Amino acid sequence: DQQVKQNSPSLSVQEGRISILNCDYTNSMFDYFLWYKKYPAEGPTFLISISSIKDKNEDGRFTVFLNKSAKHLSLHIVPSQPGDSAVYFCAASESNFGNEKLTFGTGTRLTIIP
Amino acid sequence: GAGVSQSPRYKVAKRGQDVALRCDPISGHVSLFWYQQALGQGPEFLTYFQNEAQLDKSGLPSDRFFAERPEGSVSTLKIQRTQQEDSAVYLCASSTSTGGNQPQHFGDGTRLSIL
Image 1: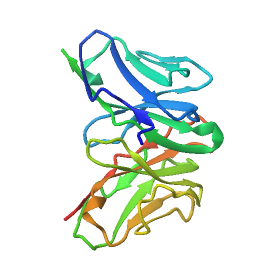
Image 2: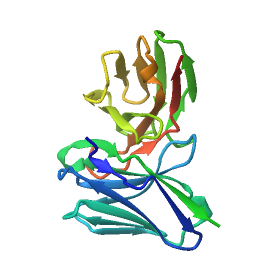
Image 3: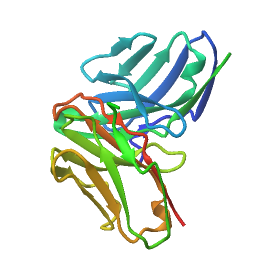
Image 4: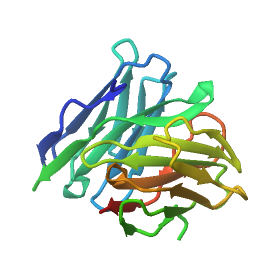
């Protein structure tokens, strides 16, 4: 039973354009959401997070949007750069309930075309 | 470096052997997590420590898996009588506090291959 789903295994975007990665979840107890970026043979690197009390969080080129009613979040990267090519994982936790373990999606491979 | 450090980076073992994987968290981080990542999948939770206390081991797949963090810093994940299905990347992560909404920071993992 996949509680966090990333339905697009891959995405290709032209350099300079906007990349939009999507994530859906089923567990209504999730209250903290994160995006990680992963290069081959490296561990996931934390990018940006959002608490369930917000619907948007921005950090430089990265913005995460949360739609609680739809149980959906998305990561926007603008403008996209070649170095953004990586696998992106969405993750969630029941943080405020004292359960900090992360549940991950299966990832989306983003390729930025120069 | 200041990040989470894991060793060894690669480990090859024969089926039935015992292995031990080490994690050095970021200095001062109270919380430590172990995850298992199979090829093409996202990381899956194994176990969680708050200082030296193992508060959640619900993700450990069998009693062949054992983790410890005796002094609240370095942690070891041990797998006894390894099986081929144990082949995966084992990731360690740490975070600053036990409060909510703290991102976990990951090491580069140990890639375990069981022959």
